[in-house]
Every structure is written in structure tokens, then in C-alpha cells.
Image 1: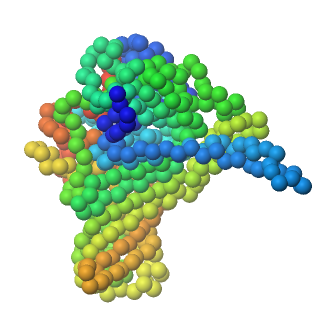
Image 2: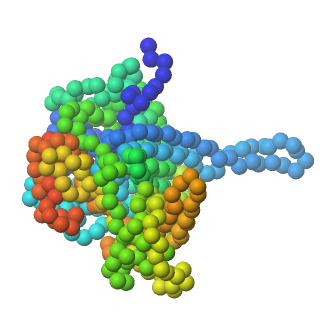
Image 3: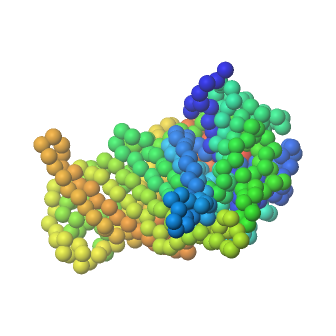
Length: 458
């Protein structure tokens, strides 16, 4: 008998967008609810390398009182129940970002083909801001994915027995495609991404933290063919008839690995002189020893209510969205400069953070690249003491626009960082800026789920 729930019992999943649509797709690209068809693929995908998940529920109430009385007459809930979902995971590629609705330029995973969005940049938040429910045709499907990437349903599955959540063996039979009566499921309906942050430092793994707001929480005693947790805004009733199933999360051998600190490099180029020698920052940039970085952006939301509705119909992003980058370093030699000149010139900087493959056989090149194009200096803090080296911490910021593919924050890279060499997938457009990047993986299964004739990337 199990008397506690610990981390081997849990799995975290993301559903498709928008949250009220079908959660299955046929081999012909048609969205449907037929979980029992062997030609169907589930559009509920596991998040990889999750290390922590938590959620909180808040029911804000309004006090109604009357003159001459001590107590309250009523305490109704006039606003929606606040459900906050937080997820932390180790960085192994950009697969989780894509499955959460952020956009990145990733390879199609087919030999000889290039990045999904070509050589240009795509704003990570463009799919979250858009309300265009037409089909993108990025993967050749007829009905999926859509241009708009939110809201979506999230799921936390819990193994009922005292065994590992991923102990099932993979197989081709219908029973092996899904986890069914052996799990409980927490479903979070109509989730919107509210925050994203990534951090890495010396002797610490790169970690991502995301926050989401949801409209509903449903608990299921099965993970097979259940009604989705999405709710109807006008009535606050759950949407019946639209089903989901939790897919088998077994990955087998040849698993992708995670990024490690020694494989990270950072460069800053000052636009005015196209140089890595940054003027007026008071320290020689070439002498700074980077100890760590973190970047983050919040997505403030503006709920769209209507009279007679219990819940908001939408939660649009309020612009502007600012991405903040903080860099911690050990200072080297000082450099001649002036704070007055720094303020007067208000330079723009192009900052690149590259996370390389772990060195394994033919593994070369960049696995993930974060670009901050047109960033501006915010602040710098220098400190020294008897017991430590002189440190210099500085921060930059850059606005993010869903329609700007020239300036802002952008992500480029592979869906997963593979562990071993079995198949070479070459990119005709190398985002590393030099040489040819080679994607080595056992097959597509660690990064996608197969449907007849296609591979689903996210």
C-alpha cells in the first residue's frame, strides 16, 4: 500500500491549443476524439526533465455588509478562482518550450531540410499573442497546429501503485499507447503562460521555470478517454464530449541528455563599433569571467469579461513585454570610460548565449542559442570583500514584440539534445554561424509521437 507520493510517481503533460479542441489527430491530419483508433496520435505531450511542479488555488471574495450589523450578509466570489501552476525543468533542448506554446526556430528533423521558420527569427510570444485560429501548415498537416498557441490544458499524472511512472514497456498495441486505469490525473483547464525564466551558473545545471494561470482543476481516477478540464466561460461548466488520454511516457534507451555549465558560452557585441570591446562599462569585457546568467520575461494579462459570464472569455497579453538578462561575472582589469558617456550614447548590444552539445563522438556545434538583439544596458553592480573576488553584475533588457523578427529575444535550437549517434540529420541552414551542425539521435520518438505518415514535433 502506498502512503506517500514521491517524484518517480509523477509525469507532467501539455495539451494542444486552443484548449477546447480535440486532443487526438488522425494519420490524415484530422482532429478528432477517437482515442481507440490505432491510426490516431495523442496531442497530449509529456514535458521532459521536469524537476518540480506545484499549484495553488485562491478564491477571492467580496464582503457584503449592512450598516448597524457586525457581521457580513454574504461573501460572494465576484471574480474568477485563481489557479497558479508552476513547473521547473532542466534544459535539454527546446521541446518543452514548443509544447508550452512558445515559438523557436527548430529543425524539421528530416534529413536535408532546414529550420521550420527558415533563416529568420520568430518571436517566442507571437503564437501566444495571436488569436488567429487558422492552420500554420508547418508540419504538412491539414488541421494542426494553429497559428494561435493558447490557451491549453495541462495535466499532472500520478501512478497509483508504488512503481515508477514510466515503468511501462513501449509497444504497438492500443493498450500500450496510453496510460489508463493505473494513474490518477490532475487536469488544469484553459492555461495561459504568465512567466518564463531560464538560469545557469558555474556548477549548476541550466534550469527553466514557468508560471501559468488556469481557470479550473479537475481530478480524474483514470487517464483514458476523460473529458477535458476546459470550462465554458458563460456557465463555468466543463466541456463534456471532448476527450483526452494520457499517452505512454516510456522512452526506452538512447535518451536525450541535459545541458551542462561547461558547454555554455556568452558573447556581447556593441553595435556602434561591431566590437566585443564594450566602451564605458568601466571593466574590460574581455577580462570578465562569466559565473552565471538568468533571463526572464513576464506576460501580464488583461482578462476580457462579459456581463452574464462567470469567467473571462480571454486573457490577452498586455504589451509591452520586456525580457531582462542578468549576468554575474568576476571582474578583471578596469577599462577607461565614463558613466556620462554611457548614458549619452545609450548603446545597443547584440548578446548571444550558446549552449553546446556535450562532447560525445561527433557531437559538435550549438544545441541551443538565445539571442538578445538590440538590448540596452540597465544597471551594473560591483562588489569586493576580504573573502571573495571582485564581482561585477550587470543587466540588459530588450522589448519583445510578436510582430518583430529583427529586434528582441529569440530562441533557436534543437528539440532535444541527443545522447548517442545512430542517425545523422543535417541542417542546410546552420544557426551556429559556422560549419555544419549535425543532429544525432536514435529516432524521432524521444522528441515526438508518431502518426501515420507524419511526425508530431510539439
